[in-house]
Image 1 (cartoon, rainbow, N blue to C red):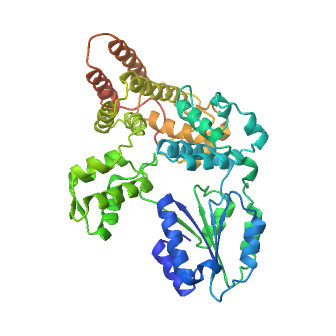
Image 2 (image 1 turned 45 degrees about the vertical axis):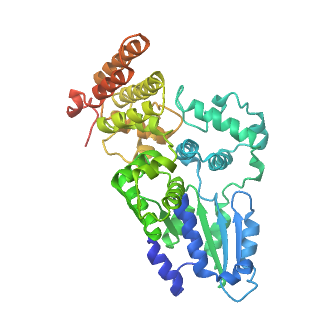
Image 3 (image 1 turned 90 degrees about the horizontal axis):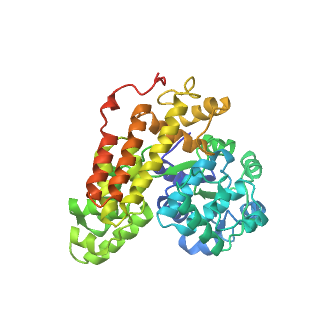
Length: 454
């Protein structure tokens, strides 16, 4: 039984809600909602006695359960808040967790990325001894944990590994999923005074424990609408900006909104920080202008190069060109951009070969990730990487290209490389011609290979 936030809050007020709740999704919205629920259940003057807060990565379940079973000091609801609950990870989620870690790292969330890396290593069965033996200069040793092919993401993983080593990561303090104990709690009955509030960075909705909570109406996803690559919908971001400015009595110029989206990206916590800065900077002025954004909003365009390859894979020429302009504007070297595009085309070429070969009897256009796992992986067919989820996303992009077309793009990449390395030619024009040729190829409306699209 799925419910929205308004329904859950009303049920909490009336006492009809379950005595536990799992929140997951966008970190900013999760944290704000947790505090909203706590404020509703525990009066401010009682919080020192009737609220206990634990880090799920380090606390034992005995401590959590002991707190739940101990009556509150004052006669009111007692809330036990377990943050970063690790009870909903699974090994099947490895690819998604790896992508989330790299996403956090690219967006500047270094500490969050390291913490989630520790969770993933624990799920994978790593010990503290194995972690300490890992050489920070050899990120290839993490190939079983992360999905990367050749140079794809290798520099980021190496930087993350070095940072994690510097922070003295302690796996021994991490607690792996203890699902049967939480399941036992669901089988029994919580004391009438207790309320268990859980929040998680990432969950696997396929786990039995999550499904049990969902059946109880005790789960809530908080996040803005995203596309299949996990990028927030533009309209959702614009609504988020408007909602956050409204309490401050501020309006914003359309051009300024576009500048915020281009500079701040779609990390809601970072976006909120930039909006707070704008509100302070604009002082008594009722309208936030483009010059205000230019003056105070940081340009966090590190992820644009990944947006570029996604746009190329989606055949979105306008978006790809916009990303190219941004990358060139922030000083990215043309050969680095070309190398990233070449890596994506090589992956697409390999995926197209597999689609036309081993996967031909099984792959259907529009196949879900669950179907991909249940049907394709069980056949033991050739995979692109060690991550089924990354394979699935790459195969979806490869659907849009014919084999001959991708081979032609490899030749175009070689020609572009020669022109960039010669003394003549303008780098931006060379890359623009290459990108448009890939996104607007004449064959895009023709059937791609013999893969079934039923």
